[in-house]
Image 1: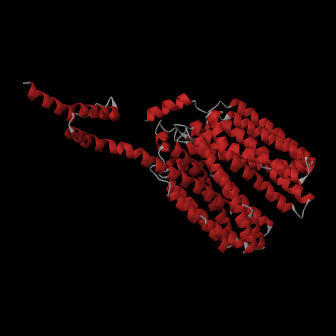
Image 2 (image 1 turned 90 degrees about the vertical axis):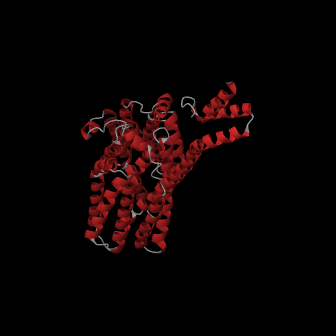
Image 3 (image 1 turned 45 degrees about the horizontal axis):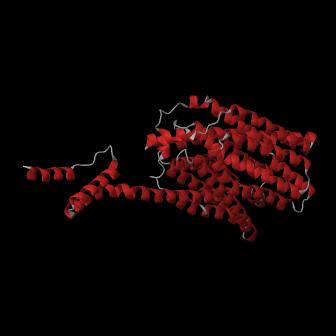
Length: 468
């Protein structure tokens, strides 16, 4: 009796699937112990045949996913780098190129203004479009291709209708590019690691701006101003390669975030108190910030006309170096300190910069003061998409929120140059800088009204556990 029952019970144990409550690792441990007790190599081999196919996918999938995510992260680094290179080609080089082709300053100002107005008007529609499409990578590729077309058109046909249309096309594509990078970043790492990811984005963008400014300036000097735009179009190729290498399967956090709740209407987003308070902060920052560098440029030109371009170039490069070195630290501090302390630091650095510009006159000191501009740029470059992601979390309207903040940036910059120019003409540059510093201090008031948006670690742990 017992001899007939025992093999049957052992067989039933061997073939019975492990209980899901205890997990595969505990079930595997139970089988190994049982095989040692039986002292039979045949049962041990049977257990390996049963368990190994189940365990193999679980063991290899995380490692493969980790390698794929790391490759996608590196590809995003390079995409951000080359994208900054491309955008640099549409900076001051446009005015230089058109001036060399005997354009009047009125016509140059007209096409530049048209591009600025399109960029301002397209912020919210561009963000809403990125939220609506299924593939952010595909839309990003089309936007980069449109920028390439704009550069080639300006280089080949520098006539008013073509340049006007090219500037409008470039501005419209740029309204999409910014939200695309932010959306891919959020989808790649999720909310918990977004601060560090945005710090890396800012670092590579800053390095790209510096490298492109030097390379394109050298290209314009040694070849021609036209060659700058051909180089801009050529840089589109590595940007697209980097974009394609971002694995679509790795950009998953954004999709899970978008379906957390029903997508709210645009009217409810426009009434979001935290988003509006943050938009007021950004608007006041731009009102205080945007006019400072142009005013410094005018001061340097009047005091040292022969070396003015060199000093202005140094004033541009120094903040880029600071951003490249400081931005990753800002991303980590945003996760540990929270967002609000960094915003206070940002406005304090801007106010101090305005006061120092009003007091110093040496070009060496002016370039040194520009370190504060790098601190403000690093903080704001990381915290804008980070705070918007916190506020819009679970709504599927992240990029629309970025578009609203982008509109505040454009309005603030336009107001800054107009107001500062009027004050300089009637009261002098020192009063203008003191006034901009006072606006920066006023900008810290809405920060006090903005609640901290960073979630505590326990909340993130619960969120990750729920997703797991």
